[in-house]
Length: 409
Image (tube, rainbow, N blue to C red; front, side, top):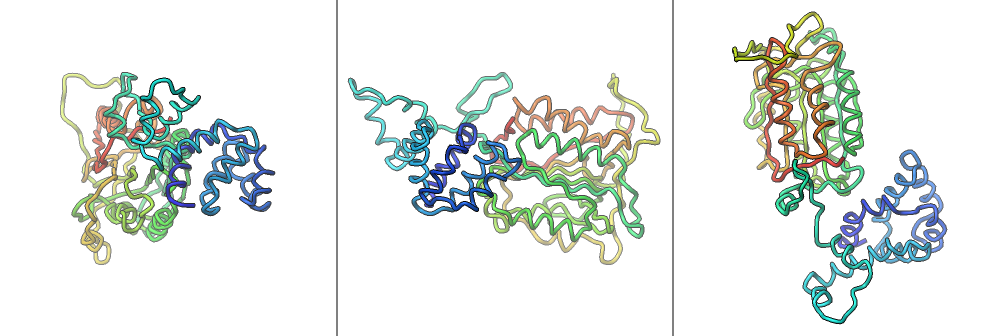
C-alpha cells in the first residue's frame, strides 16, 4: 500500500472503527483475495473479540495487503451495503490526489448540485479535529497548535512498578505503590491507551523494557506514555535531572531513558508526544515549607504510614551516573517529563493510599482531562500537591512539547 493510501486510512480510522460492520465483510474479503482464512480468524480473535477490536485490527492489517488493498477494500464495502464508508474513502482519496484547489470550483459554480455527503467528507480531508477549550468553545488556534490524538487506541502506556528490592540493595519495599499502579492502569485505559505493566525490574531489565517499547512500530499510534514508580536519587546530568533504581539497587538516569525514545532510536514516534511520569525521589532533602496565612483542610502530620522514595546520591565506585550524563540528547522535541518532586527533594508515599503525586495526578486527569490540555492539568497537580500535609512536595516538569496536548476522552 502506498503512503497516501496508508495516511488516508489512518485519518479515517476513528470513523471506520466506530461504524464498520466487520461480520458482513469476511466473505467479500476472502473472495477478493485481500485476506486468507487464517488472517481473518486472527482478526476475529483480536483484543476481546468485540466488533470495534476486530474493525481496528482489520484496518491496521489492511495496510500490509499490497498496492491495491484500498480500492479492493472500498469495493468490499460497496458489496456489503456500507456505502457511506466506501464514499468517505473514495471521495477523500480523490480530493487528496487532486489537491484543495481542484475541488473549489465545484463549491463555487452556480447551478451545479452538490453531491450528498460531500461537505462532511471534505472536512475529513481538510480539517483536523479541534479540541475544546476550558470554556467549551473551539478555536482555530487549538486546531493548529494541538497534537492530534485521533486513533483508538491512541498509544501505548508502559508502567514500571518497582515494589520489592533485593536485600543487598539496601532499599526498602515501596508499600502502597501497587495502589498507584492500579489507579494508573484504570486512568490511562480510560484515556484510550493500551496499558502494559512490568513489576520489579532490575536496572538492566528496565532499560531492556524501554528499548523494546521504542522498537515497536508506533506509526499507527499518536502518542506514547511511560510511567516509572520506584526509588530515586540525584544524578549528574546535563539536560534532565534524576535517576531511578532497579530492584537490584543499580540506577538508570532519566536522561538515558528519554534518549531511548529520541528520533534516532524510535523514528515511528517522530513528531509525536512522548510523555514520562516519574514517581521517585529527587534526593533526600525534606521540605518543611514556609508559613502562609492559611493552610489546606487536608493538611495532616505524616505518620507511620507515610514513607519517602528517597535514596542517597550514589558516590561510590561504579555507581555514578556520569557515563549516562555524557551522552547528550539531540535537540529535544515532543517530550514532556513530569517529576513528582523538585530535584533534590523527597517524594512522599502513603502505605495505604499511594503516593501524593500519583493520587493527585489520577484525580486531576479524571476530573479535567475532557476539557484541559496537559500543561494546565499538571499545574493543577502541582498546586494540589504543594498544599498537602506538614512536609511539603513540589511536582514539576521539563516541557519540550511543540503543541498543546489534549487527551482522548
